[in-house]
Image (tube, rainbow, N blue to C red; front, side, top):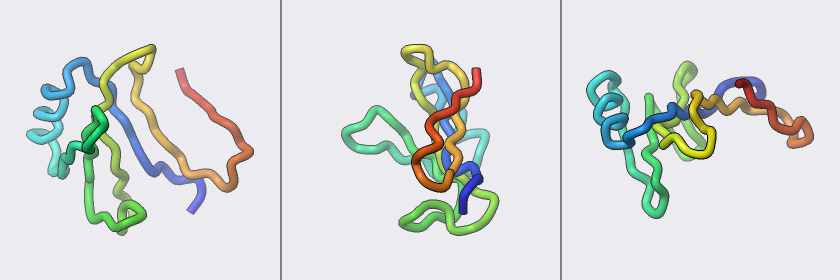
Length: 88
């Protein structure tokens, strides 16, 4: 379905502290991805192609670096010719 938010990232200065906060504050399943410095937050029922129920999106804490210091939302779009849009 095009036009819906499908992923989020929340910037953190300290990844371990961010993961600890997420674990305490939300009923999310946190999974470290091997070979990547990233933890995936699964927010609800999920299958091979992402959440299986409306209202859930997955994402995770993202270490601040190179100007990445605001939350990121990934939106599904039809096709790939629309380019990229970034909110400051």
